[in-house]
Length: 331
Ligand code: UT7
Image 1 (cartoon, rainbow, N blue to C red):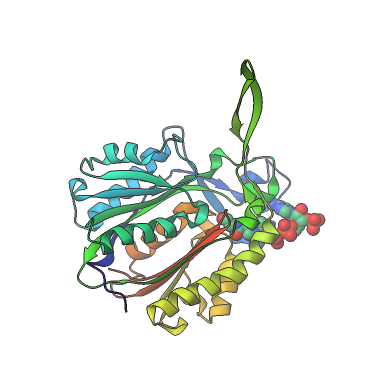
Image 2 (image 1 turned 135 degrees about the horizontal axis):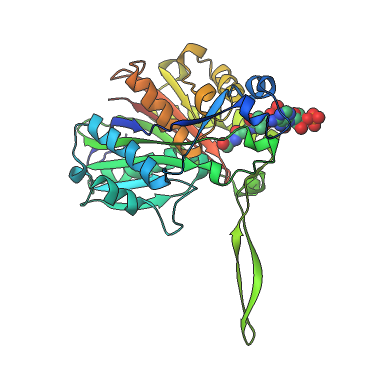
């Protein structure tokens, strides 16, 4: 058993409220699709879309404030903010804008990008700072506005994604409640899911040419990503459980990245976790990338499904390709 300077607890959760919803019927007016196809193939009925007044900064800040309040802390108590996002307001980083918006003036802040696995990667990163005794109170945010980068003419992807933000507070604790984790990446499968930068040559002076351009909308090989998720997610959860000295029967809640209801059910079946222990908000939110796990966690905590002491097996997976799992005891 490894010894750490401090244990880690997840003590607060929060999410942002987005007013505008886009239904499957709305989408069927834009591309050739139907509520029936989307609902049966993905479980999604609607998704939320950020309004003109919203930004990644504002939604991430709202989620963070709610998580800090639940943890009974004040923003000035926060030592570090990690913002998992692939859709920042500013490519130089949005975390420090969130820092100022919530008034966490003592906190260092940085962005972390690992697509739909971003929240799990950020949670594990936060835990390392706490275990080494460097920081005591950290806010981990998962926030993405994929509507910014969706190709609204591509029915294979535009029906899947939504906007959202969720957050947790991670604190130093005498007891270590991050029971186990495992993180993985496989760049050989990078081509399956991309939001790529495309540049054009622009002669500058003499032999010097610069290459400037823009990011293109999301492209995905859905079938490949589906196959990857269904095979790798159960495996990574089992590895994280092994590190925790637990087995699948110890899982009270299975909290997966909300990519597709069929993936949630296939993973649960492989792990022999009953469906009533699977947290799903697919129908209402669609796939909100790094935000999906903390939003689903926050909803389940606030409606009292998740109780202090419950063991949560969480797993994110997506572009990179990246995937990971964290097993923690809530509260
Ligand atoms: O967050 C990152 C992780 N992402 C994921 O985990 C996504 C994983 N993949 C998936 O969830 C599924 O692959 C999708 C939901 C994306 C697609 O479901 P599928 O059952 O794998 O469908 P498919 O791509 O095999 O397409 C089946 C058919 C095709 O028609 P043909 O070629 O059989 O005639 C598609 O053109 O369904 C068609 N199709 C649609 N039809 C109506 C694809 N999208 C749509 C649509 N509406 N929106």
